[in-house]
Amino acid sequence: GAVVSQHPSWVICKSGTSVKIECRSLDFQATTMFWYRQFPKQSLMLMATSNEGSKATYEQGVEKDKFLINHASLTLSTLTVTSAHPEDSSFYICSTGQGAYNEQFFGPGTRLTVL
Amino acid sequence: AQSVTQLGSHVSVSEGALVLLRCNYSSSVPPYLFWYVQYPNQGLQLLLKYTSAATLVKGINGFEAEFKKSETSFHLTKPSAHMSDAAEYFCAVSVGNDMRFGAGTRLTVKP
Image (cartoon, rainbow over all chains, first blue to last red; front, side, top):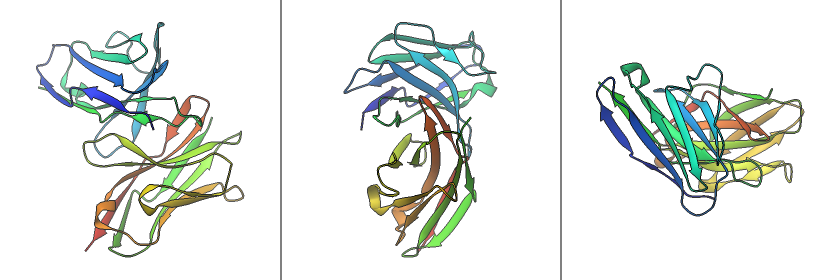
């Protein structure tokens, strides 16, 4: 399967600051990437679909202006949490949808803690 | 829209015992089905996938799953649990790029 990396693996920030999370596909060109959010002991919640060279598609209830997604190249998508608050603390996971049967390959995740 | 339901948020087995994790799906079109495993503070790793080629699917780490259309099920099994199998398991269904996950089942393996 595809290899996906995320950076950083964990980040702690103060309330009101912005945090950028990078998602990279290491061994193929990804036209589509997905961003998920996972709360403790819960399932993954799709936040948005990132499309290379175009605007991301956000799921209902996800604030576009708060969670900025940029997919400027076929190997990199970024998620920026703007003006982060403690309720944004979560585990953020990216994935690609390049499998032949639409399987997704996931990055290792980024744990964000907002103080 | 498609969806999956995982029965049992927590399953506990003894080492060496059979593992059975249940998943039922709902889809208006023939689905692709997946099982993923997640270890603490890590992303998801694909265990196996059903793509309609065969109803019994074998995956990594000794796991397998059987697609039963009549029961709309895709249960995950492993004949003998190992301590290293302790993790969170997610069943997922996809139609096109739209993938939906179940709530997850936490597997505990007792020595």
